[in-house]
Image (cartoon, rainbow, N blue to C red; front, side, top):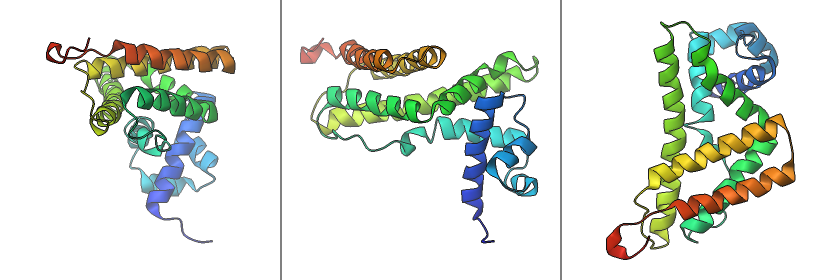
Length: 209
């Protein structure tokens, strides 16, 4: 049997952990269960990760810091901020429909702070913040670059608008997972994109409001 490179094996375990957490819950996501999902030896998992906490940290990164890099390119690059917001909303939603377990796992991880003792809660909160910081940073960079590339002014409230976008995706995802209706959810995503573009404010000196 060909040897699997360590980086590839690590990603395999991270993806498998995300699936196990979504299907069975965080408490049931033992290293043995994750290794079984990955169809890999348990010893290989312990070689790749020093502890379950280290593996969970990588799952956080996979779903936040590395998330934007795994999305397909925005097809309307150079078309301006409004077009990019719409295209980004659509591609994020297409990913949610294709990989719903990722959103379930995200919710499980974010709620972890309520399931740990007082001593562990600050660390759980820090991990939650790092997850949101990853999403906010990548969203702000995408929106800022869209404006700059099209010769448009960057909105003064870019970060707040990025947070509105992320909050909206979270809410629509939760509703869809609880009560699936693709037509309704797709319409809500389009409305969210319009709402975000309508939320942008600009410095008074440009005359834009």
